[in-house]
Length: 116
Image (cartoon, rainbow, N blue to C red; front, side):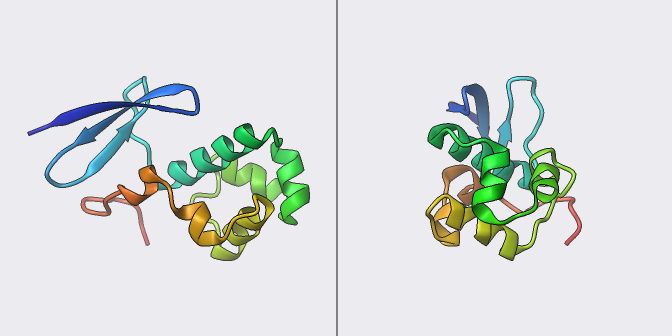
């Protein structure tokens, strides 16, 4: 059984497929969002909501501009918790608050092909 729900994330339509095994987030082009893309979407969304550029976020967080650029562009797939913590603090959030959003909470690691 497959159920689809349409959700607006960062002004783009995302289709969530609910199956018995996992929740899959698809963008409008049908691409499945990977785990690392979920927190990138979170960073972009928070920046947009707060009118903060990635450059300004780097300055506010103390994270190197190149490091933050690599995360946002998807070159760094698994940033350190310390880096995410610094980003969370820049948004005036705890790391727990930063990582507490529906898309990440619904992510299932079953059948996940990414290396640990």
